[in-house]
Length: 89
Image 1 (cartoon, one colour):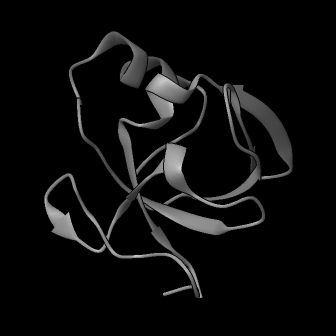
Image 2 (image 1 turned 60 degrees about the vertical axis):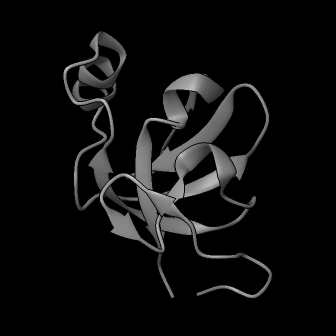
């Protein structure tokens, strides 16, 4: 785990973070969507966010800016909080 980031309980696993709580520059792996039937979570899947995908956090705040497969896009902080991620070493 990265220095300065305390493990949390998000979703169903210990040590996961909400995507909204990741530091700038972190590369993370999406583990699960904590509200899988939510319309916003369905939209995130349509944008290409899926379990197992690795994304880089480019900026935090509202919105959270991510890079996925070379494409930058912004996700509102509330929606990013529905995505449980693990830091990639």
